[in-house]
Image 1: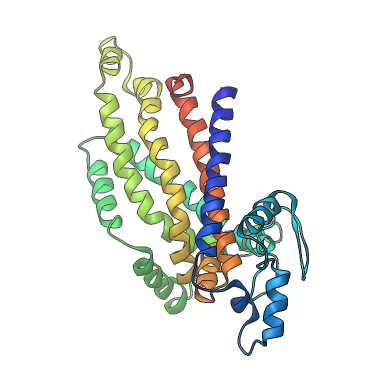
Image 2 (image 1 turned 90 degrees about the vertical axis):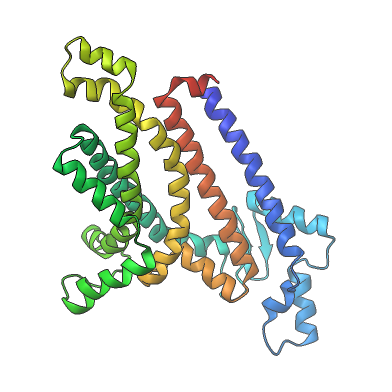
Length: 325
């Protein structure tokens, strides 16, 4: 198991390095000039030259690349001060360290992603398993029909409707907002409840159908039918033989879906006026803040790689053949 985790970690580090290199050269090759964007409007030639020197844009490309990559590990010095590792640069518009800005926004996005994953795993997989267990019953038909309807919704459609009904019209709930869980756990829960539920709705519907079909396939396997033929009870066979095998395709898709929730977080944060990493990425692109945009891209890649490693570990725990391959 240790060798399996080591291989995945080394592969992730190599991938992250390649993504960092591609990101750097992509923005260096961009037609926009770093210094001009940092200087802003009404920029004098002298100030432009000073900014180019401070940012190291007068250095050869190879030296700039080395400073950028090594700064992620060891930190860098900027006119605004020292940027501690991991240093992703300094925002042109805000003048703050990119890493600090991302960390200020990350708890909101993490709450959306983790909360949404918990909801669609517990509700979606649970409903799918129950529907498969009670296949052909009214409960099965209701769960299948509801999942088909809910999977057709989109965040930008469902979000405003939920806000209008529960917040603006009836006042049953307050406007969504992020409150640190360490300061007010109940306020954190209530403030993020609507965004989490809305973003998880589509995934919940998908996982209900997937869990149902996976469990039905497992119940039709030869070893499960053999266990039933030996006189074992249906609940025992369900949890002892079929349940674990049905999780394999779910875990396979789980890592991809959690990664894709970062994209869903962008729409969710904009819909509910939340200040998260997704909205930060949009702001960086709109204001042409290249260091901020590059930093968010690298952070997103790192987050996705971590999720993929954890998914691989979970997959290996469920199916021993994976870690032996």
